[in-house]
Image (tube, rainbow, N blue to C red; front, side, top):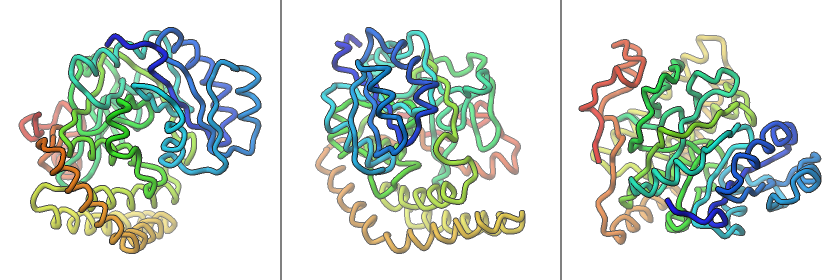
Length: 352
């Protein structure tokens, strides 16, 4: 993709993350030279983040927000002030090296992807794929997300098995390339999500308008993960369960969508009791509070669903369900022993 580097911006969102910036931003700046500008969007930090960026990297564009608006709100406000044709949303705890931008841009042009991610590996165990995105994201019939290279707690080693470009259902927000016109056409990220799964919502909205989302198999970045919230924190559990229900109510337009939502809510109940029986009452309560908040905001999400349906109709382009998995990943993983992506039946995936 012949792209003027001035028209590509790597945007790092920061909130009191001085340690991550000191560890990762130098590599981002170095590996982006000649390929993209770099910007830091600061989400109302109270530590020395802003002063350190100004002092150490005066060439980095700095967008300062007055409050912590979350992942969604921070990026919406920050990117609104950045002029570019391609936005690269990059977590502050992602290590980049070498020629990682150009291959993704070329893949986006060749495959006509509106959003795309590189392969994402674990920064502390670099041969393993990382939880948040791995080699591209998919969704099963009940709204459970999984990735090529990572299904639940099984992480594959990167042995080149996912080195090809492919269309997926969602791309990770840890390192998300998105065309600015596509971003603006759907209104950016949904701020009601605050954090977690908002990039999946973005990808789903794009796909409902006929856009393609993919992964570039010839570029890789390394994600530390858990930099903002602990992996199994009650707050993260609450966000994940609530936002997953938001996703289904707002975006699921394949029949019979009401039964998918009801089945998912029942499965959430089973998960909550499992947490309690395992001695994790705080996680049990997190799921309970997630459902309470979902019910409280379901009217608003249903209105967004209606708006999305109208947008789909006005787009006059068939929705793109590529990457949807027609089976249950829970059954395949826990009862059939299909714990790697390549062990899943390929004819169960919707093709483009």
